[in-house]
Structure formats: C-alpha cells, structure tokens
Length: 251
Image 1 (cartoon, rainbow, N blue to C red):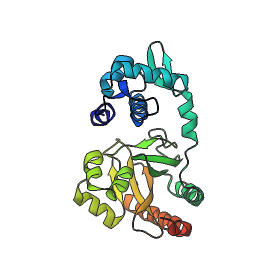
Image 2: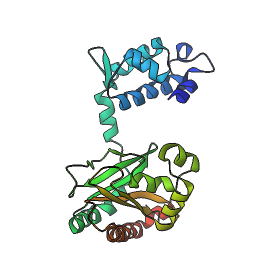
Image 3: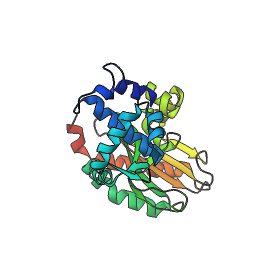
C-alpha cells in the first residue's frame, strides 16, 4: 500500500492541496476503501498510518464517504458501508459463461460429491462467481464474491497464464510451475492449504485463444482419486468452452 499511497500523495503536494474532483482524491478514497476492506474496521490513526495519507485528508475523505453511505462510522471506528455492498451486487461476470456453467456444475457436484467452484479474475483476484456445496462444505465456503488465496490450486491456474511479475509478486508461482500448469491444464492441492481438503483446478479456455476465461475447481476429501476428478473437470471445462462460440468473436 505504501507504493500506491505515494502515487496519491506525491508530486503536486498530495491530497491536502488537490482539487475536489481530481484523480488524486479518487485514488485516495479507493485506497481508504481497500484498506477498510482488508481491516474490517479501523480508526482514523490506523487508516492514516496504513495508507500513508495525511491524517487531515483521511478525516475529510472519510466524512465524505460516510455522507455517501460508502463508509459507516461506529463508535469512532470506520467500516465499509451499505452503499458499496449494493454497488457490488450489480457486478456480474459474463452472462454466457454463467449460463453455460449452471447445469454442468450441478451435474459435476452430484456425480462426484465434490464442492464445485467457478472463478474468474476480478480486480486482480481469483474471485468465486458460482459455488455448489459438496462433501467439504462445512469446512470450505464457496459463495459468490469470495476470493481464493494465491496459494490455492484455483488461483494458481489463473496465475499460470498471467505475467511473470504478477506470478512472482502475488502467487509465488515459479516459471517452471506455471509452465507445468499450462502444459497439463491442471493444478493440485493435496491438503497444503487446508488439512482434510484436497483440490483440483482446471482452466476453462477461451474458444478462440489459448488463455483461460475462468477456472473450475473441485474440493474433496483427500482419499478421492484426484486424477480421475481432473479428467471429469477437463471434460466439463471443454464442454463449456465448446458451448461459448460467441466469445470467439470478441476481443
């Protein structure tokens, strides 16, 4: 966050002297919102310290965000407000992808007993957009809007096609690991993330390009055959890709 704060406060004197509609003010507001999202709730001093913004600027931005309903103040501390929640509900992934995966994910969950998740890149995060609960549902949440950590098989599948700088910074994915995932189109997690839970993840590929548009993940008890599960996921992913010819006409 320090680097981002520097771009907001540096150069022309920072937020303290910025015009009300300047890009610096907008960046500062989003920096505060990002910090609150990570912290859950925080006080004025903590927000100034973690963002690197002047305390007076933080106070002014928080007051404006509270007026808009984007932030709430509770006993001297701040948290994300209801307006941002409702705005977030309006975000939707590609409608064709969602339509094409609805029935296949249900059938996959019924056939395997696995908890099935569909994820996409959203603002630099591996974000779940559809989840079907299975045998590990009590230990792993799979709801829309939740984010897979970088260390998971699902996030690694998406990172494998990303830039080397992103892979190294966020996921710790080596060039060799990324190449193996791209070659085999699968990533495994054998209880490395959560004891008692194994995961298989495969990409859903773009119909016209050698890049993934989504990731399909299955979470199961470790005793299950992960190689057999990978075959089923690949088959499902390929079927979804073949049903999305419209995407091939796009960018």
